[in-house]
Length: 259
Image 1: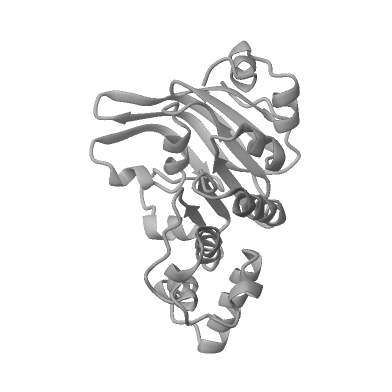
Image 2 (image 1 turned 135 degrees about the vertical axis):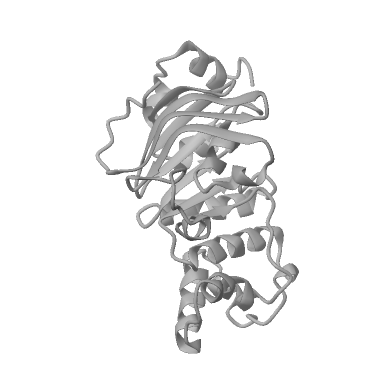
């Protein structure tokens, strides 16, 4: 079904009649969805419902899974990212991703953040220093690590490592940040810091997050999308979806009757 959200913000991602197959398994079924720019969109639903699969279509991460076949369109800024002539490396620079488990490289804190800019060019040292500081500030980590930038990233706590991964994604200056259950492996204090960070970043980036935590979706997102069995059941303004869902299946899920 098409999103019925009355969104004032411009649409940056437009998904049209999207079907995805893993070999013969039909994982995503005729999905239509619009995602607004510079806002937070949350994907919720029970395990195996397709929310992470759809998230991975937005930077073509599913390309890495053998036997994957896609029909339909995923338009980002009006360009079909599954059309001809798309450079996947350039797409992933524009559409960054943070995973469920923190995955810093076995390098220094500085080199983790500098990795992307170095990969996409050779910025001067002063420019790179500024970019590293800016990215660490945006991820609310600068004050904690500014005196230890040459220290191994693996020495950081789990919550700090996840914020470092966010800084690493931001360092290439993407338009869109994907977060695949980015707080599910963290303690409550670290989770709160990530949620506060998401709220601070929402005015500068388009954020799409998969979360198993409905309370988190309600706290931080502008739009929530409910998935069930590879289908988008309902897409709505977050407050509207949680207070007055239009579909009985959505109401059953958010009230805890299943899932």
